Length: 405
Image (cartoon, rainbow, N blue to C red):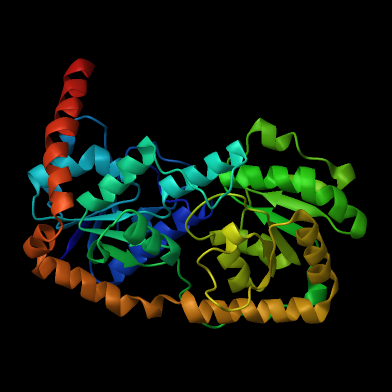
């Protein structure tokens, strides 16, 4: 039996973020392939985390800079290790290479942190998003981690292209696997049964907080005047006090906190608004809109890598005036709204059904297991970075461990 170890800085919370949904999808896929799975995290368990024991998965708390992890590795002896963020590969990758040199190391990027950071900096400096500065520590760390791993899972084909052209990452160590939908049957929705606007997003994620501020300050003041009966409902896990302070029933602007069911709040809304100014990867909330039959208005950053040349399930506008006018159109015109819903279904069938990627993913993993040595030898930069990491990160970690004693 193949043994998979997942190393994460968080517990799986599919109702809190797209990253949580993504991880649960990966877990269920590996279970379907008869993998035995251990899930190890550096985080304290959360009341909102998914009970992995229900799936027969053993969980384990692991400490940073602690050699007890080496003993744990020898006990479970996985032949496949999945990191859910590059920071975890930095912390534990060298230990795996030392204790289990033949274990395949996979990085699930979820999105490129360096791209999100570069876009955020461009927004703060009021510079063009086309002129991105990748000359920072996050970029160097993340790209190094991608090179050190045997395979990195990418949710965005835009980021696949970026890695290969800007950073010269070999295609052989990348695999495109977006957040997926497992079924192609959709529940038809009724224009007249839906009401109001919605936004949903985990507030730990900075682009979501920025989007809510744009809605509050730039979109809703004008939109609410054009649609005097409509409300804007904001949902999201982990809202802070600054988020709650935006709540204003008199303006029909409601901060509702964590949604018990993302599906329920998206299905009941007539339109989702997502004026996303920076970020990376693909946006889980927009994919859920397509699945649940709710059109959206978003930006080019929001829609990036999600529809290829197909029409969006709503509208993509970067100018706030156009964003507002298209929101009114979508909200008011049933035929426009209905076409947007159909567009979303077509996008899912074209790009986001898991069945499109399953066979290729199985084949890639099997090929890695059969040809791991030659695969690694073809990635000289990865070998070089691994060599230096074993001598720098390792000794820093061991020094911290001794200091903590």
